[in-house]
Amino acid sequence: MITEQNLSILKTGKAKAIRISTLNAICDYLQCQPGDILEYQQETA
Image (cartoon, rainbow, N blue to C red; front, top):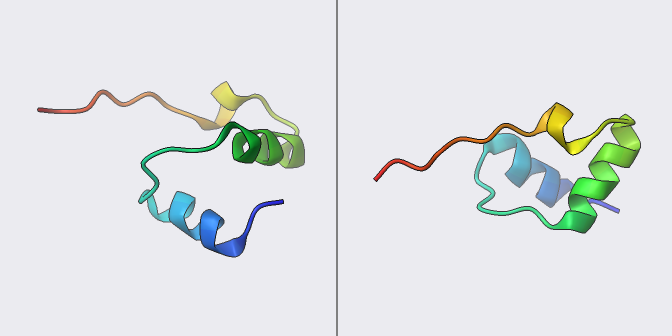
């Protein structure tokens, strides 16, 4: 289960990390793979 607060943090881009259980729940709900919804962005110095 994902809380509205967690979804809000993810939506606004304020999340610094995501739990695997949260990612699993999102992918299960959307019937997708993590690579379908995640994008790697290298940190700038």
